[in-house]
Image 1 (cartoon, rainbow, N blue to C red):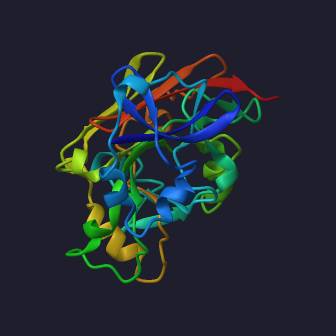
Image 2: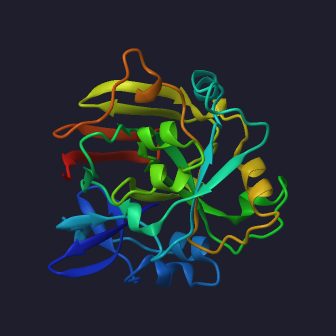
Length: 278
């Protein structure tokens, strides 16, 4: 099932994507869905009537309000190789993402300053369905609700200036597009066999497969939940493959008027326009 959050006639709700549009669900928010005793079972039990499908006015980020958002760094070998002078990791590296940076599909990524080196990073993200602490590789996937797409937009000049200034690089306002769907995990038999790509103005920039993740999802969740409790609706992004603009020759950053698409096979395509904010 492909779940989304929509706005229609001034009202918001959670819908399911079907042929012909969107069908409303009983939940007005993802918070209501993830408050269910078993959110995945509740979603799977829905009976969808495609005859009631409609076109929403707008799609919103498919998240619980104030969700925990965690990014992962250096988790594809080709990205770690291209970034060898700036990224040297021996275990999964995690970073928190500010809620104020989240936007949805078709929303604008706003470049804050003229000298901001605004880069793209397509990522498969895991949506947590059950409270998760002290997970093991054997039981980690039992706590996964589904998957979504994230574009981990980065202000590269910040980390050039100070490599530990991660928050100001990763969490400027509008720098974390998420969506358009949360796809329940039963729709994705193997999350480690998905093509993943980004397209700048329709031209491919990154292309890999999630089989190339250095640390697969169970390992990431095991490492993260040793000390962090993840709550239902939390998002854990799994890292980006090589091909980002900062490490291209010549370097290539997003600019005013561009369109960027982050795509993960079976999960969705997330497209955003880029505008100047100065």
